[in-house]
Structures are given as C-alpha cells and as structure tokens.
Amino acid sequence: MTATKILIVEDESVVAIDIQDSLMHLGYDVPFIVDTGLDAIKTAQEFSPDLVLMDIHLKGDMDGIEASEHIYRKLGIPIIYLTANADEATYARAKLTGPFGYLLKPFRECRMSIT
Image 1 (cartoon, rainbow, N blue to C red):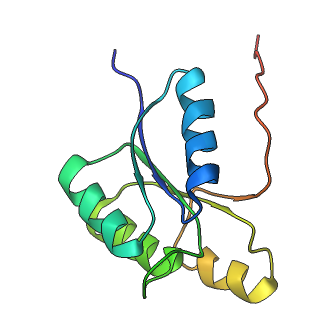
Image 2 (cartoon, rainbow, N blue to C red):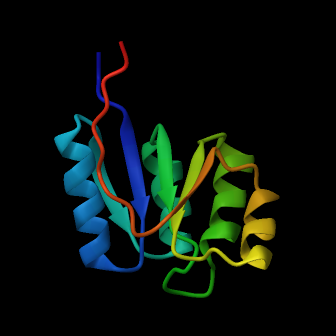
C-alpha cells in the first residue's frame, strides 16, 4: 500500500518545511510544497495528490480559497485549510468551497492511538 500523497500550499517556507517533516514522520508522502495559488493548481493537475493542505494567505495574486475552489471543483481533490485566518468573513468565504477541514495555526503534532 502506498502512503497518502499530500500537497502543502504555504507561503512561509519555514512553516511549510515543519509541516512536511511532521507529516513525513507520521508516514505520509509529502513530495511537494508550493507557495502560490497558481503553482498549487498546476501541481495538483500534474501530480494528483490525495489531499491538499492549503493556507489562505499565499504569494501571488490568487489566495488559497480561490485556488482551492479550482482544485476541488475541477479535480475533486480534498482540501483542508491550515491557516492563521480565523475571522468570520474569511471563514465564511472558505466554507463555500466545501473544505474537508479548517485548522488554525499554530498547531502541534499529536499522536493518538484509537483502539
């Protein structure tokens, strides 16, 4: 069985690398980190990840909400927002894209065993 492939879309490289390291330590395949909405769309189209972890604030003209809308609508790839943006207007806008989750940064790794 192959590991779940995750695309990280994050404009802060230190944060992106930390997330990548944490996920890889948990057994996920995280071969891609991009920092713009356009690169997120291109990478998702080319490599078909199983999941996209998307920040809302990105480099470039397109934010994570707009990129997520395109990725999910066109490719059906699940999106989880991982963002520091917690204001009501941003949350309401993000909610319209049908995300699979909305996690607020900072977060910490937590290993749980379900038995």
